[in-house]
Length: 120
Length: 107
Image (cartoon, rainbow over all chains, first blue to last red; front, top):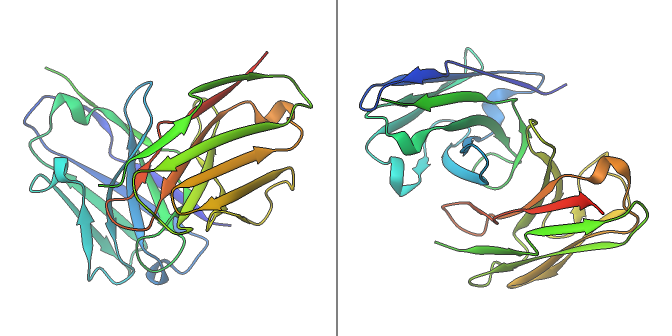
């Protein structure tokens, strides 16, 4: 069965960096696009970034452009989110999610999330 | 960016009720719309894609309809497991955007 496990969350001060990982299993990782979606405490879902199945295309929301970098290692079935210059407003549960297809459509399977708290 | 607006934001209902949630897009998205269910403390669950296609394993009491800018999610007979928050999401164009959510509460 499809499994996505996030790791790397924690408490960090504004301006610092953090790297999230998403380990995938139960499907052919290299066939699917992958997303990060976040949810601030008590708020709704916000899509953050997608990487296509082969890593050839990446798309970010404006608020993280130039600060966050998505990557994937298809040989390790793992996706990463490198977050720099973190802001208080980046505080959220970050979900790793598989795309329904090879690119950027709808996330179908989701991990359980990892909490990132940015606090002075 | 395409704005997605859900209504109502909260809905109180009883087990067995028929429930309808509306999602409106700020511009036409054809039928590139998905619905998710999220229970407290859990990850979202994929329910419906292409506005009306039920994901495998989703109970038949769930249905979706609509195209263009107006969409609905209907639960034909609310079950205890269905008390949750529901989100619509468009994938016509990037950035992907979600509605603000509709919380279905026990009346």
